[in-house]
Amino acid sequence: MNMNDFSVWFAEHGITEVECLVPDITGIPRGKIMPAQKYLNGGQPRLPECIFTQTVTGEYPEDEETGSDPAIIDMRLAPDANTLRLVPWAREATAQVIHDCQYMNGKMVPIAPRQVLRRVLELYESQGWRPVLAPELEFFLVARNTDPDYPLASPVGRSGRQESGRQSYSIDAVNEFDPLFEEMYDFCEVQKLDIDTLIHEEGAGQVEINFLHGDPLHLADQVFLFKRTVREVALRHDIYATFMAKPIGSEPGSSMHLHQNVVDLGTGCNLFATADGQANPIFLSFIAGLQKYLPAVMPIFAPNVNSYRRLTRHSNAPINLQWGYDNRTCGLRLPHAEVESVRVENRVPGADANPYLAFAASLACGYLGMIENLQPTPPYRGSAHELPYTLPRELSHALELMEESKPVRDLLGDRFVQVFIAVKKLEYETYLQVISSWEREHLLLNV
Image (cartoon, rainbow, N blue to C red; front, side, top):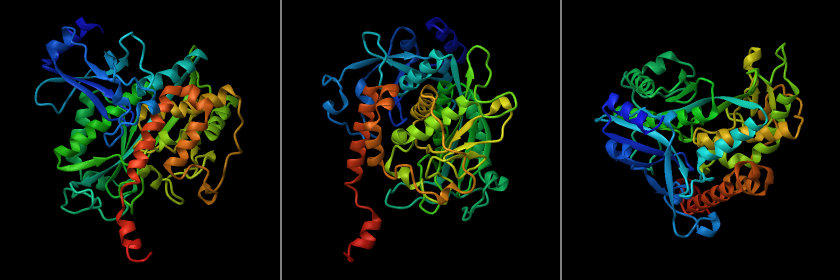
């Protein structure tokens, strides 16, 4: 689509405003809102590069830590026409479009999450491969909470009661919030978001949405827009939707499981399976790459201090990188599947992960395994929760592993890794300044 095509689409839908979106390091939508006519008449928006060095609390690392130009230079936003959609909850007819970021000389901005994912996808394409991905995204519905000192609580459903117990796969528990989910599906349909199955997960008020498999960049856009949509729908029903990895201490955490396989660009055949459905050697190398390199990208899969509260023994989250056939206690699971759908499920990422970066990191690990012809450990049978932890247990350790991994830096981009580590280190230091209620309760008068 060129601007003439945009103009036709705007006229067909009566568009008066445009939301120019850019996903930042955290996955927060940044950007500008412009009058539609100005946008069509060459009003190409610009943003400062520092939107990618901003922490979730709104702070910025020093320029020397991120390699940023101290002049706080501009980026030019280039629309991706494939992402042009309506904003279904807007009062006036409003378009939204996700933009890529370019420097003023036309070069792509390497620290933009969409560009990091594109970088990895180009590596696959150079080998004649095309990765296919399907995310499963969990989140909690919670009662409105305007004071962060108070813990979250389950919302009240149509019965007038809160959930108090575990309701895995309960249809009735989902029906408690039918009006919300009906509006969610309506909004997703307007935006052409390819969501599939809706289930009630184990936690009180916890829900999982499955997406149809497809192109990783297309699906990262979908997850990015879906998060925004669900938060908006929940607010319209006077509750919150949260994608925190562990929002409620007594409940399970929320994940973003990634189902992945790789097909041949020429034939479209699944490279992971033989004709009789067995794992190909290249598939085993992909798994081995995840086993070897995933600890170094843990800050992407578990990007916040809260993320590591989810990864605990005897929960539904993994604590190590064993792999097994239909084994949900392993970090890497091979579900039962037909030949064309043989795949690996990466169960490590949390729901709080940036989808662009999580997809890029997982595919990068698998790519390294295939290129290096690595071999995995034997498949594990039984409960992998009985084995030792092999995943980092807190953010600062994970950042050290990332900083030390040259293959990861080379694949994701050295400048991106530099910026990401600087942002996450500053967030971690800011977190350490906060004294928790646990510390006041158990240490105040006892130590």
